[in-house]
Length: 200
Image (tube, rainbow, N blue to C red; front, side):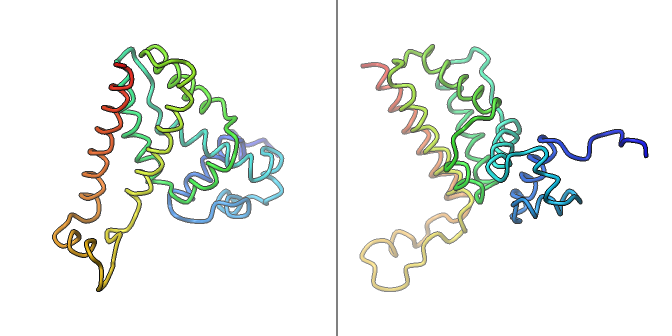
């Protein structure tokens, strides 16, 4: 029989399929990806090293889809754009977050993205011995605000008997409006703090 004009399976196809399922809120394990691609689960193992390999392929595809590349702009402008893009990246794939943070990063595209960030920070004046700490803060910020954006419209439902929470919730913004306002305040505070640290 003639070979297909395009490969039925490849690491890129497998990673993209897993990400598509994750974005749709569906299971994205080996069996689910195999069903989605119309192949046997055993076929995936010719291209990936189990579920850990699939997660890393999904991470790579995720970063490529939401990539922010530096173009010589100031570090704080680059960082603000990066935080905005990563917030949506995590909000679009909340079920993937626990798996991503539980595995060592090895995908070349992701390493390149972190290398870009480290380079921007060093060139912006941050001491090299603080760069990894700042990157960890940026990651935590993006993940946290991504999950906040993905949270339900009603985050709190206290009922009766609160001293303060119930009162401040009355008339407060809900849903995306609340999440956006929170993010804008947070990103401003973070960037101001980093600028102040550089100034000392």
